[in-house]
Structure formats: structure tokens, C-alpha cells
Image (tube, rainbow, N blue to C red; front, side, top):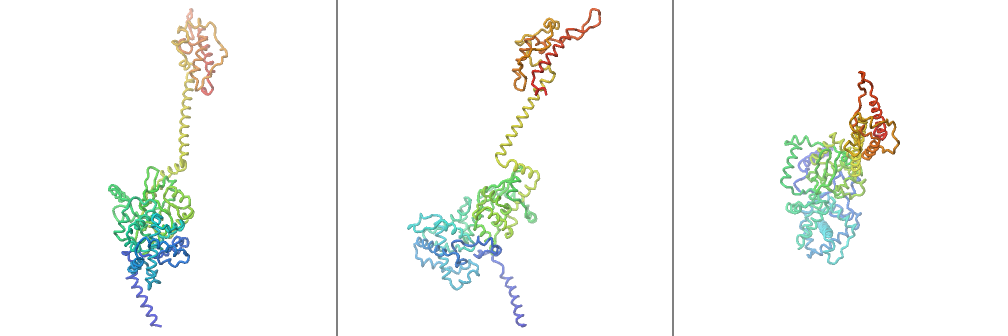
Length: 570
């Protein structure tokens, strides 16, 4: 019993030494093709995104009984591809067997345990699967144009699912296999161009950067198709020199010059979902390219614009995340970080719809509700990079927390959410302006009538130079011109003065007053008589003519006021 315990102790100690010296992944080598990390695989909601639907590529799903048409479909594709090559099938097959040792090193050793002593079966698998991939990509690029006999026909539904299966992490084939199968053919470059175009077409806005493929060929980093898709999503467009100068200034302003300052600033900032950002005056717009680093936020006053690269949410997106989580793949988690950034914006299906309307998110998984649930579930299983997008998050956070910006933006979002509300606002302003002008004009006219009563009305009447005859300014003429007092005026259909008929009223009143020879009372040519006159005996006595003058003046003023409408006198 003691010897057994001693042996177990020594075994445990050796396991520690083995873990210390050989347990670390080799980040200098290419990442291995392996199964999806258990962090994602154990989630039942995510499993369906990692399983092939039509075709199995490589050894991980080679014996999958749920894919009965996979073997026949691959043989059909491979047969058409081999026929176009024009070389002996045996020689092509030997090329694969010669490099089997190196090809097997591209996989996790645990996944090839059943093929450890059977290179021939594995080589045949690589041979058939490789040519199936080449023919499928070639068929997508050129269709039946290059098919001499026209016998290759694949239904569109199978093609769609097959192209989706080519970007599954567990369905990858070493790119070296594709190179071996096309190295000895005359138009092998045509096949490679088809693969490049296949990757570009998978990206929404690939941009005009065409050197990424040559750079990958020079560096020998064409690991597999999924890796190439990730490289394409991270390929940036060439920037002019002045853009880099501005970028450096923005970088140092945001992150500082010291490592300590940068470390302090790389903390998480919370931002709201799409609905909350819109209330804060932030609008979404798709970036010019699909490069996942092509993201920016700019604001003027209380308006902000968030530019996000467009991306397709499908099975390949989930597999890119799984690829970045592989233990031997040293990367900056750009795809994972971008999906986590979108998760901050998405809480419900309405947020997904807004992103779709902005041309940012292309849904290939189903309904908006399903996509919203997927992002909300991913939040607990993904860990983004703390540095990527930290500056954008901080700027959005600072914009939203500014109170006056928040209130102004919410008011704009509430009352001007559509062009019709803005037009209604302009109409209301115009109506208020016209109403104010109308009120001012009415009050001004009313003051002109009410101030001084008859004295002001005199300014409205024609003077002695007008066509209406008037009395002279001699006071002694009052009695001769008016032998009797006009106590009441005859009832005429007199025009009532209002806001719009002053000229008509003026001429009407002038004719009536002139007919009674009373115009002098209005234009000032008939002067008022003194109330007292000097008597022959000595003391002053009341002037009877002055009494008649003032009575006539009051009666005329009363009648004139009766011709003015009530709103002007109120």
C-alpha cells in the first residue's frame, strides 16, 4: 500500500513539472483547427451555430450521421473539379499523401487520434474535401459558364447552406491543401482568384483594398477560410498622411502619453441602447467600409453621429468569436469586442430594427427578436478587449451625461421625430408671428382713434386745400356760417370704421361733414371762441357764441365716435 501511495505522489509531482514546461500554448505557431471552446459549446442556444447543415469538411464531422447527403455532394463537386484539371488523379492524390505529416499538425492532436495509423483515409478525405471546396467556390464565382458539359447542377438552398458551412470553425480544412491541389494546374490562379472573390463577397462593404490577399500569400498566413474572413474584416483602407497626424493627436488627447494614464482610462463606460441614444440626440450611420475598426463618434451641439461598420449576423459571426477564443490563437478579440459593443446597443427587437434601417446590421438568423435574444445571451459568455472602442464609449458617455445636451436632445427627439412635426412647428411659428403683427396693428389703430378723440380725427380729415370747402379761420364767422345749432344729424347709412376700411370711412365722413359745413371743426381752420368777452360796462360776461361753438363741437364728436366699430373703442 505504501508503494502505491509513493508512486501516486511521484506521478502528481511529474504532472506539475509537465504542466510548467509544456502546458503553455505556442502562440508563435499557427492556431490549430479544433472544436469550439467549451465556454460557448456548453450553451445549448449556441450549439446550432457551430454544426454543419449540409456538408462536412475535415475530420471533425466526417462521420456525422445527420448529414446523409454530404458524401455524395462532395464527390460530385470533386469529380467536376478533377476533370477540369487535366492531370492524372493518382498524381494529385500523391501530392496530398506526401505532406500528410505537416497537414496533420494543423489539427488538435486529440481530434486525429482515430486517424493516427491511417494516413491514407485522411489523405483521401483531404483530397475530396479540398476539391469540393474549390469547385463550390468556383461555381459561385463563375456559375455554369465554365462548365463544358453542363452536368453540374446544385439547388440554391443547398448552395446557400453549403457556403455557410465553409465558415464553421469545426469545418475548416488547412489552406495548404487547396494550394497543393491547384499548384500544378494551368488555371490554378483562377481558382485562387475565385477564393479571394468569395471572401470579399461575404463582407458587406469590403472597400477597395485589394492588396490584402497578396499580403497574406507573402506572409504565408492563409491558415483556413475562416481565418481569411477575419483578416478581411480587419483590413483597413489606406489612409492619407494627414489622417494619421490627426489620429495621433486624437489618440494622445484621449489616452495620454504615459502607460499609467492609458491604464486609468481603459475602464468600462456604460452607454445606452439605440432607443436611449436617439433620445440623447445620437443618430446611427453605417461606415464606408466593413472594417471592424472603422468606428467613430462626432457631435455638434446636442447632435451626435455614431458610425459603425456594417456586419452580417449569421453562423460565421458566431464562429469568428469561437475562433478568437481558441486557447492557441493570440489576438486582440476585435470581432468579439465589436459584437459586445453591439450588445450594448441592443436590448430588444426595436433596437435591431433601427440598426437594420441604418444599414449596420444584416440579419441572417431569423427574426429581430431572435437576434436580440442572441446578443443578450452572449453578454454573459464573451469578454471584450478593454482597449478597443474605449475612446468611442467614453465620448458617447460624456455626451449623454451632459444635462443640457440631454434635455435639448430629448426635446428634439420628442417634438421633431419626423419631418411632419418640424413642418408643423414652422407653421405654428408663422401663425404666431402673423397673429402678433395683427394684434399690434389693431392696437396701433385703436390708439390712433382713441387718443385725443376729435383732435386726432382732425388729422384724418381733408384740410382747406382739399376739394371739400371749409369755413374761414375768423371766429366771427361762426355765427354767420351757423345761424342755428345742428343738434342731431340725420340717420345716414354711415360706414363703420374697422381695421380694414379706413380710406373708405374717411371719404364718407368728409362728404357728410362738408355737407353740413362743419369741416372747420375737424381740420382746425375754425378756431375755438373765448368763453368770456368784455362788456361795454366793464366786467367780462359769458360769450353766447362760444357756448354754441362748444355744443356743436361735442355733438359732432359724439356722432363721429358712433361711426367707429366697437372693437376699436374697447
